[in-house]
Image (tube, rainbow, N blue to C red):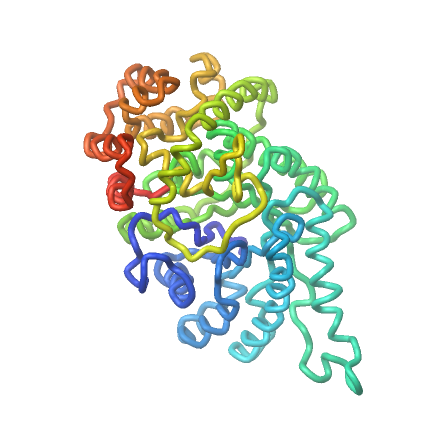
Length: 476
C-alpha cells in the first residue's frame, strides 16, 4: 500500500490542537499528533521532520509503548508509515551529521518493532531528501545507509563482529525520496531520477514535488505549471523504464501553497490526477471541523490515480514575464513583509534555517521569512501573494494558462476576497489588483478588510494577525 495521505508538521494552522500543551507544538505533543493522525483522522503516513525541527528520535518506541493496543492491530511499516525528512548535507552544513544520526535510528526502530510484533517489521524504510538537485545526492544517502549503517555490522570489534555482539541490522536497505524544490530541479526531475534508477531493480520509486517554496520563489502560476510539467515527464519516465513512480506533492491550505482543504480536496485531486500522495498539513487537520477532515481524508484515501496531462512548453515564455513582474513587486514589498513576519506566531518549535532561497532567503539583500510566515504576512497586509505578478499577463494569456491550471480562476477569486483595496493606495503598483477585483466582481470580506487596514496603517500585532487568519481559515 502506497499512502494517499501524508500528515506533516507544516505550521500553517491558526487554531491550536486540543491536545497541545502550548501554542508551539513539539516533543511529546508531536508523538501524540502522529497517533491522532493515524487513529482518528485516518491518515496513512506521518512525515517525521528532522529538517529544521527538534523532533523526537524515539517516536517509534513511544508510539508502540503508549498505544500498543492500536498498533497490535495496525502495524507500523505496513498499515501505517513513518517517513523521516532528513537534512541535505549538500546545503545544510550545520545539520549534516544529523543525517547520520537519523539513518542510525532506523535499525534501532526496527529492533523495537521486532520485539513488539515478534517478527521482523521495518517501521521506517524510506527517507525524504530535501532540496535535491542531482542524482548523486540521492545515491549518497542510499549508499551511506547500505554500506556504512548496515555494512558496519560485519566489522570486527576486538574479538567479535558487531552483529554477533549487538544483533543484526534491519532493514538492509532504504528507499530515498528526492524532494525537488527549485525550478531547475523540478523541471529536470525526470532526468535526475532516470540517472539514479539506471541499473537498479526497485519495485517502485517515490518522488516529492514542492509547492510552497516554488510559489514563493517564482509565483503561484509558475509553481503549478512547473509541477504539472514534472508530473507528466515522470509519467513518461515510468513508461520508459518500467519502474512505477509514485509522486508526492506538498500542498497546504492557502491557494498560494496548494489550496488543499477539506472543502477543496476533490478539486485538488482533479488538478493533480497523477499524484499518489497528498500532504495533510496542520491547517487541514486543525482549522476545520473534525468530521469534515475525516470525511475528506477518507475521500482522498479511497480515490484512484489518473494519468497526467502534457504541458504545452510554449507557455514557459508567458511564465518568464510573469516571474519578472512577480519578482519586481515582491522586492518592493520585502521590507514590510519582513516587519509583519515578526508578529506571525510560530506553531512548531523550529531550528534556524540556512541555505536555499526558501530558507534564508534574500532579495536585494533583504531576507524574507519561510513560506508560511511569508504568506501569512502578505495576507495580513491584505495583499494575497496569489495576485502578485498578474499585471504582466493579458486576459488571453490567463485563459491559456487556465487550460493547464484548471483551478486558476477559482484560486484567484478566493484570494481577491482577501485583497484590501487600501493596499493599492499604500503601494501604487498594486492598483491593477484593485482593478482585477472590480472586474471579477469580488467583494472583499469586510471584517478581514477592517483588520488588515489596521495592520496596513502600521499596527503590527500578533492578536490582529491571528484574528484575520481565523476569518480566512488558515495562518499562511
